[in-house]
Image (cartoon, rainbow, N blue to C red; front, side, top):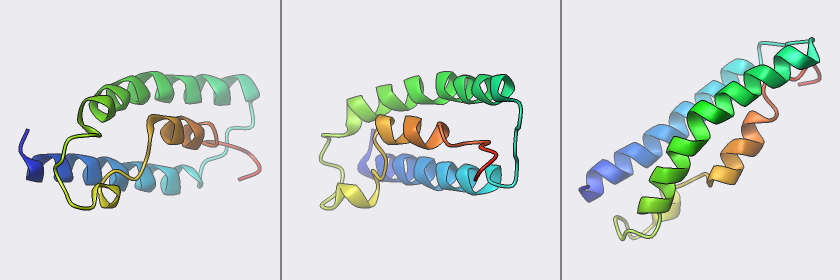
Length: 89
């Protein structure tokens, strides 16, 4: 993959994740089982794909400043999703 494409993909993922995190704050799911099911579904649909992409390209020299584009590790993404739909948020 070309350097520009990697920059676009990593920064696009970060931008969309941040937007999703911001938007979900307006939603509260008081039912604990449903809240956990939603989180689990999100984790299962996002984290494996991001983990594979991240693992494959995180050490690729596509930028002098990769942290500008790679803002989140797969663990960060998982942690963020675990806070989604919280009634106390």
